[in-house]
Image (cartoon, rainbow, N blue to C red; front, side, top):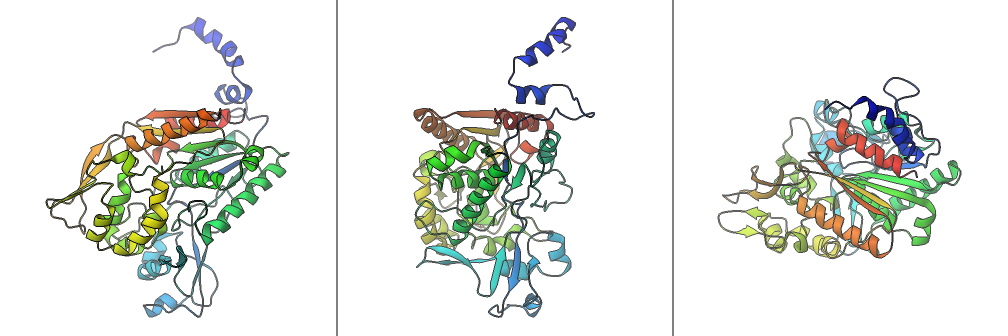
Length: 435
């Protein structure tokens, strides 16, 4: 629809009524074609990427006993990329070695996860907003690549005002008081990074921006700090399609039939299932009973499984080893949502077909299921999105802390930070967080 000329003449005046950061972003470009006006006062930003974006390096010691001779070829040769380039794994026939060296071991005595003997791992490029990599051919704008470019157009610079906090995708943040050697170290490093970013930028507090699993990790990090520290160092949180503690159906599907979030060329999800089930993250965010209730999540001709039937479901999957860590580490997190208690903006897509029930009619979990669809963002179910958002809103309201929930029609879980329409909304909210 055309805009009448008199209204166009009013636009500059209307823009003047907006706060300067948002006015700069929405105003016509002043520097170069297609660019945006730069922010005059920038708060540093820390990026927490989605699940498949972080990289992992490994080092094999003398304690490592390979199951295949060539899996030990890099023993004693220092650090090497383990999960950076999927095609390298295929070209060098390293898939069986990858699965072995990525696998974790759960220690029931310590109630914690560790690497296999002789395998050491680390996440490279911590601190850089470009310390992530895209694992899917052709998906060149994912993993914050496109969003980072938008932030750079506003004047942000990697290592100066823009930082990244990649993580080990195999592990899961614990509840306060529960053990996690990996996350104790990670949260300590993130805390140092936030304080460094603040000091580097005139002691301005930081804006945390997390997408998907990274959004959940950003929130868990904030919850691991004192309120006094949050008030000093966190300006705002921007959660973009965060993995909710209220859960999603996709998690039980991945447990049953293998991960959809790790894609390797010429390798089926079923083939990756044994490795996947060793990850602490594989059982995190299973659908919460208080949100999903008695509605069947898994349907077979012999019986159905709801969010109250995880013990029987894990047994049916021949994954009874997952029951103890689920009961000790995951179930307690389903019972309570801890809001971050800092100013927070939560953006999520809706109106996208999202699997909410999985049908394995013959009870064969070695085949892909038939999906029964509902609403959501393509990955996270709408009922979970709303339950999470409502509880965050309630807790923030009770404590008089800013909270804004923005639903974006037809924005998919991954596409929300790639599609031009939704990305513009995301960037505008990051700009608003600078106020």
